[in-house]
Image (cartoon, rainbow, N blue to C red; front, side, top):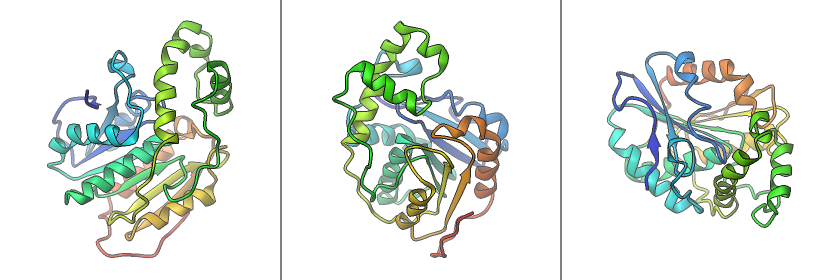
Length: 253
């Protein structure tokens, strides 16, 4: 049971951007980026078991096995420059994948993290894995994380819940490595995200001994949809600049 990358196996591109979604998410949110980013950037959404084309496969319930499966899938495709992007739970996955790749001498040119507190800050949300399904759905609604068409389709919502709940279990049982990485980090967030503040996103600077930049955009936890143009412009700019090879001061804007 492995992670799955969407798109052609080896199209010409200067940089591969591996993208990890929020809890319950797949590759759909990132596919439109292919038209917004330069042709030199190959957008590679990572689709995990339990969603989209892999919805019949059992989702992971803990971080270690999830990361191991991702590594098995992407390491054969690291023969050109690459970067990692993760939103919400995906930010934690991208961070752990980055750490493991650094251990193998395969650091990405940049790590992009979005909409999640850094691993060394304790969670401030209570656990959800013991909630009833109705209470869990109500909680998801406070995040603006369920499309209206899904809410209106009771059967579809119930079919998706096991994967979403498994992803939340991954997040809530995650024991972070909380280490500094020899990789430049870019953090992005919405200014009205109920799960993380800009000040908390700024703390991602503590996980890197290279460059750091914070961008705060208008929106809530799912700001990525409305702000896609700005997000892709920021990614494109930072991928076009060589990553620093020596530590530099952290920066925010």
